[in-house]
Image (cartoon, rainbow, N blue to C red; front, side):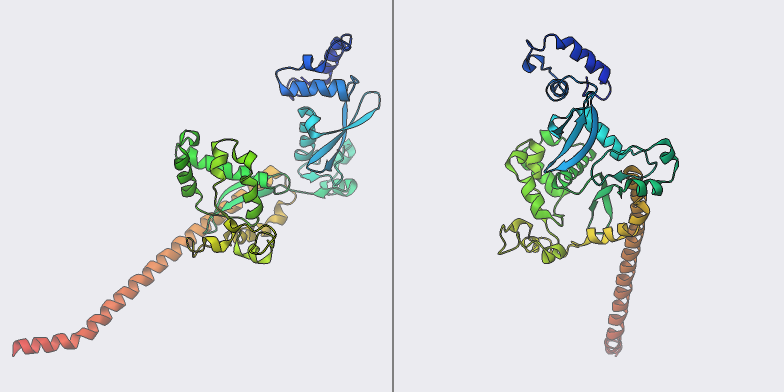
Length: 361
């Protein structure tokens, strides 16, 4: 249907409208509802919003509160605007393809006002920088979410097309938990509540995040925490704000704030984790900021590949340096123990000589 990116087409929808046009007075939308929600949305879009005037063209997309507003133009020139919930998937994917696979060659771009800009053949033959200046677009590359160990080794990376949000971080943690379970051949849905909690504590003993208070309230939401067994397990995740961000901000969740949340205070976990490096993520991202200029003009996928390779090389360097430090520490300890044995032997030598002399006499 129109909502399906594989089978959908404007011609097919026009045939459906012509077939149902004669019976429009006697047919209600409830009787036309199909088992597929996408098909129902497409038919509702064609009859109620587009009023059967196909084909419909997507003109622009603007940001509104917690959603996007899609503006369409019918074949007769009439325009109407809908929220994303009422728009068929085909138009949403069309807007996504314009953003993620732009026609301006290698450049990942994001329109400032949400307009879908089209380039002529002459404009496409020009350089990317000329197209940026002509279209007045903001140059954007894909962002990344990273899971960093205490030793600054980056364990996982996830591509982020838009801004960082609690939803993206939540699904990133869920994917990490699922990858740990898959690696150990564990089915989380088949485990008991206590076994899932033990598995969570073993994989994520403590998670430091600069906005842990917001993420903690997001995960513990009643509607979200009761969705399935995995969401109930993630609601028990230990989240803590790192000391640097806790001192600089978070006036609301701190003691004496408007909404204090003791579970995310660093002092609440200081006794159990006394010497943990809570600034490992900031130290790891300091390296990423140095190569951000090189990845700025790349597409999201290519930028992710570039950063992944750079982080892999850095991980190898950290592991080699860590093994070198461990070996040097062991050598220092061995040398110190050998020196102490020699010193003890030298201190006891006069007493052993006197004992031998007494025994000989």
